[in-house]
Image (tube, rainbow, N blue to C red; front, side, top):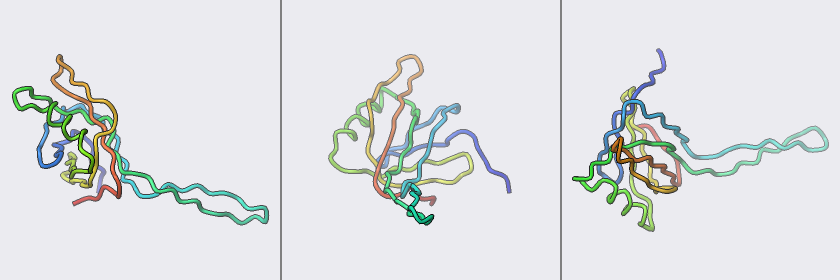
Length: 127
């Protein structure tokens, strides 16, 4: 079986679906743990496990002013909790988790898009 790359089909933030430009390049981090290996003087080693959040970085979404898309995402960023996120890839696989907007939000008037970064506790899991 071959790996499948390509355009992201869609992303859903707190139940609202957003279109994603076909050339969007998104970095996905499942979350969980990052490991560091430290040596001991007697030649043995220790594994230091640091919990890390899930993240979807560099996600470009379509912004439709008539739908209030930028305002919707801005309101999500004001919340004091995490909300459901889901992202469907060209392979047809959807990853889901809970997250919150991370970083600044700026909409481009020329391309009618906005880049959003999301982070959250736990892990992104395939549905």
